[in-house]
Length: 110
Ligand code: HEM
Image 1 (cartoon, protein in one colour):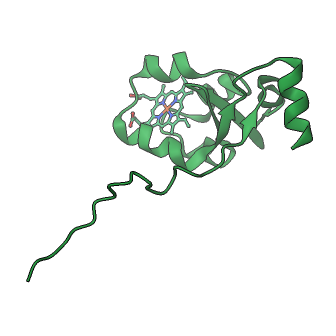
Image 2 (cartoon, helix red, strand yellow; image 1 turned 30 degrees about the vertical axis):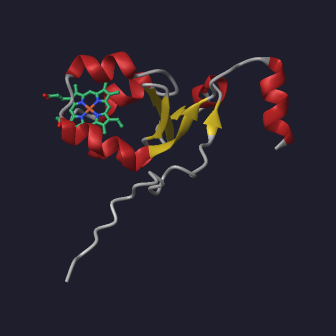
């Protein structure tokens, strides 16, 4: 009796078709209060509102980066792979790849 193991040879694993929400930096910048705080790390947007008082590095450092690009400070700390894994829980979308007028119009039309 042979056992055939399907190993996703077509490469269509989950995640391939998922849609991404894009946020403009202007939108992210508004989320800078302790109740509503977003950060950008490596072009991805994270809503860390519910993580503020759980962050082992304290809430102050997150507040300092609120609404902005925290990539450099995140990397400077040398966060562990556990910390990087945690990012997924707070991921809400990507930074809008293009900031041209036509791209914005296209987005509004969707
Ligand atoms: C959603 C984003 C973040 C997550 C999930 C996160 C997670 C963590 C975790 C799990 C630790 C414990 C140490 C480790 O495992 O590396 C930590 C420590 C720390 N984090 Fe973050 N962090 C985030 C963003 C930031 C940002 C933007 C800063 C900005 C400066 C920062 C500064 C620190 C500092 C200073 C420590 C303490 C390091 C130490 O005492 O050794 N973190 N963070």
